[in-house]
Amino acid sequence: MQTKDKILEAALALYNSNGVNNITTRHIAASINISAGNLHYHFKHTDDIIQALYDRLSGEFDGIISRIQQANIENLESLSAFAYESFELVYKYRFIFLGFVDIGARIPSIKAAYQQLMRKRKREFKGVFRLLVSNGTFRDDIPDTVWTALVTQIFIVADFWLSNNELTLQLEGKKAINHYTKVFEAMFFPYMR
Amino acid sequence: MQTKDKILEAALALYNSNGVNNITTRHIAASINISAGNLHYHFKHTDDIIQALYDRLSGEFDGIISRIQQANIENLESLSAFAYESFELVYKYRFIFLGFVDIGARIPSIKAAYQQLMRKRKREFKGVFRLLVSNGTFRDDIPDTVWTALVTQIFIVADFWLSNNELTLQLEGKKAINHYTKVFEAMFFPYMR
DNA sequence: CAAAATTTAGAACAAATGTACTAATATTTT
DNA sequence: AAAATATTAGTACATTTGTTCTAAATTTTG
Image (cartoon, rainbow over all chains, first blue to last red; front, top):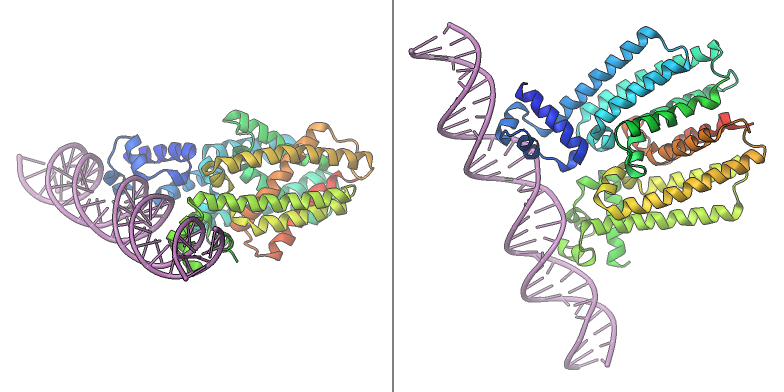
């Protein structure tokens, strides 16, 4: 494997288990037996490592989206499948979601990319809801302001379930993903016909 | 005002506007024209300042709770009033909620206190829901697992709406509080009879 | 008012951290 | 094989940060 990839792999593992603020380039270098100088040959700045990991997350997320879009979301099962895959991805890159505000402030390009993604996802979700209403899956007596609020609620839960887990239950791996996927799915229950 | 209080006031303001990780004891001391040595006479460790601020938050929250409990929550209006006051408090101590995972990992006593508070609040909320169902305010065809999930959803939104705001809309002050209070209230809409 | 205490400023230290620089080694190209 | 390029280790430096120490100043107490 390329040194560059080894660095990213090691950084992800260390960031995930220790938090991005408690890991230095020296830690990452030591964990794969290379020098700090060598690491900084491949990544001039620490933030470049974080940026590269965010780009990977972003790419993998795009993969999920396009895979789902081919199947079309027209029932609750496909929405759940999407949720589960997303939650797995969030867990894989958990250090980002556990320190998102910090990282966003530190690396403006990440914040900007996230904001753009959010605006796109918001439109997509509203479209899916409209479909599921005309579909007969969802109730047709919900005002538009409530659908709009639901989208925000969804994004807050999707992005910060891990933070809640860290502060309360502290479930690990699949246990965490399964638990919070269920919490997420329950958000749609009272909207069903 | 006592030097100790001046320090806490200055720390809160600086933490809120710059993030807890970007402010040092030197910054806090300089902002109220005292020496760093003097600051460390009053608070031996930086974390003692954060702990003291968390204790203030905790105390103010207890105040809201007991004031509300005297009035009893038996309709949506009182629930909304409680939400609004809570959201104001979250905003006042926003640096904590914007860095909760970090702070919890750094100061275990804060994490422990939060966990205890959460367990208590969970029971209280479930009690309120049961009341509002037998009341006729909420629907009686919702399974218990969904009520349980709703409580978790509520806490995630209540604790991390600010983080979402920081990453997306970036509203300030009352604008943020008002917007997200509405998002929060909408969570109850589809449960109403 | 004198003694005791508290509070304060400022200097100093040690550890951590990001990153630049240098020289050696390894790899690729010609 | 020689030259050019890329990769690596190790050292070094500047900055930041939390904290400690000392001595002076201020306030409180007897």
